[in-house]
Amino acid sequence: MDPAATPRPRARDLGIVVGPVPTGPLNALTDVPGVRVGHATVRSRPDVHSGVTAVVPDGVRPGAPVPAGLFTGNGYGKLIGSTQLAELGELETPVLLTSTLSAFRAADALVGWVLEQPGCESVLSLNPVVGECNDGFLSDIRSRPVREEHVRAALDGATAGPVGEGCAGAGTGTVALGFKAGIGTSSRTPEVADRRFTVGALVQANFGGTLRVLGRTLTSGAPGPEGAGPPAETGSCMIVVATDAPLDARQLTRVARRAVFALARTGAAYSHGSGDYAVAFTTTRPGAAPPLADAGLSPLFEAVLDAVEEAVLNSLLAATTTTGYAGRTVPALPADRLTGALALPAAPRQRHPRTHLRQQR
Image 1 (cartoon, rainbow, N blue to C red):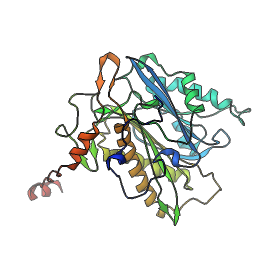
Image 2: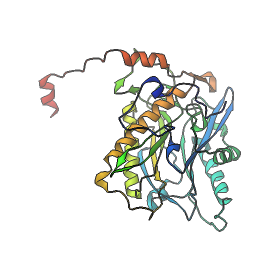
Image 3: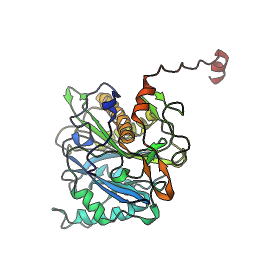
Image 4: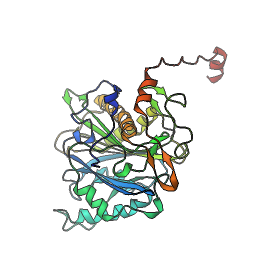
């Protein structure tokens, strides 16, 4: 199946609209001009459900980086290239997402691919950026199935069109909030300083917690499998945010921080065993326009929060029930039961005795 074809409805198709800011035409990371996304899905049923996803800013290479920021919510992960990215505030390669034990092969393949690109004939050093999530609950992670040919397919096949969601690329074997998850994306077009910009988010969702939709927690009485998926205290999420707003590396770090904060809206547990990272970059090169004033960034921050929240929901809604390694099955989030639960009256909020409130002060 073409990974760009989403077989299930997205959040907005179900009337679930996060925030007031309009989306871009595709409601995807690729709404940001100059950003392409590619997937290579690696399956060998029943045991292997994995892959790689490439986020490719046009023209990025050593000697022609884009400004970037990084935020680590919890560092239980392997984000290759993070230290130089944080030190210099520059992204000089595409960003790859893949499976934990395949990240190192993916980084080597990315180095080989970059060295072959025009303008890189004299490059002697470069900083590949590769993030990962552990898909070992549904996939034979020890087989390290993602290889150089898959990385090159994702990079060479990256396009500015619709982005495949759910069980595609790096999301093929991931699980979040007790349901089959995967890749999700969304975008917003906030107005900042009387100018309209685009910001897009892409998530590789693989984290624990209890699903929350539009502020409502969906427990076992609402849609939710009992005992499905890995333990709730494990899991990670990789987030890539792109924008065309003129921002410097410090400001992009502030953007990345909001992206990780947004996971809380969806019910993320931020557990000991999670690796929660966000990489944010702008396609506007230094000197092309002065950076926006910090005091005016609030609309952009809100857009990032909303886009990441919706991207997580899209990752769940697009995914399909998967049976994988050791016969484990993780169900998809049932869209009909989800909308039915959201239509029910909200549970009354708990009121704490006044004495309890005094004790907490």
